[in-house]
Length: 367
Image 1: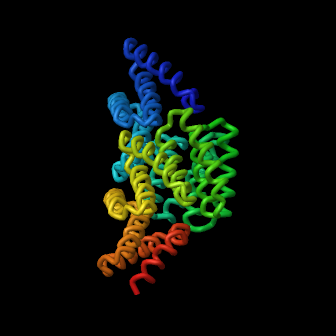
Image 2: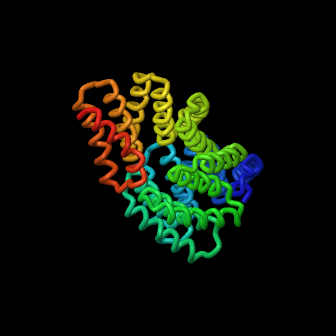
């Protein structure tokens, strides 16, 4: 409970004491429970290597004991760590094993977690339909359990899908319901995430002041929690808005902090977003070569991850820079066409509206 509401330092000390106590007492099941708890805390703090090491140890103990409940917890945490590292195939694999174990156990909580992890990978790879189906299934499982903090997550993530499809009203309604749920249970991790998603809806509507306000609130929660992934996302999204408003020095300052967090934590998806926004700052400063270098690094990461959103953005901005420089026309058009195909193929309506002026500009310059 301490970890859930954000008291990570106190929780960490307590769990370390319990690990040592159970190790000396030979209580292996209790030891696995405590190791899983500590792995979750370290993962939230951005220490992915130690978190994975501990999670693997808890998995080993659980398999030896035939303790399936703690085994599925280990797998669920590994799915999160693999996702944060950008190992999306491995994340999907362990999430499926978690789901299978929980079906066998009749564990709706863990079952929902396994389904949610798979849905998130599908969403990131642009499969909005299947991700929505799984998140609705996760919602049903959580509602059957009644009054659990995690119900807010499938609601929020269905809202993310609606946002991507251009349904800003539907997304806002789900985000508000999710936020109410997180506030009722003092679920700080969920709260910081939904504040960020609400900010992006406001940004899409053109309300940049409200978007910045929400992102700063998210930033404050993440700094208090020591939650590095959420902090990096908040800084990156704030920077994008500052750049849009012309404060390119302020934007770059935030992006450099976010880049350090992402590189130190091995957070590849967060890194590609950060690099893409840094490229826009360099473009605004007139450094086309530097911007293209960052966009190419973003492109490489997104192709490896299978991330159509980041890839489409990178290609569109590269094409725009090449068109500005009158570089080979075929290259700029090819990049623009691939970006357009990615947006259309994956039904990324909101992104398509944002990228349309850039893609139209490339075509008009090269006609």
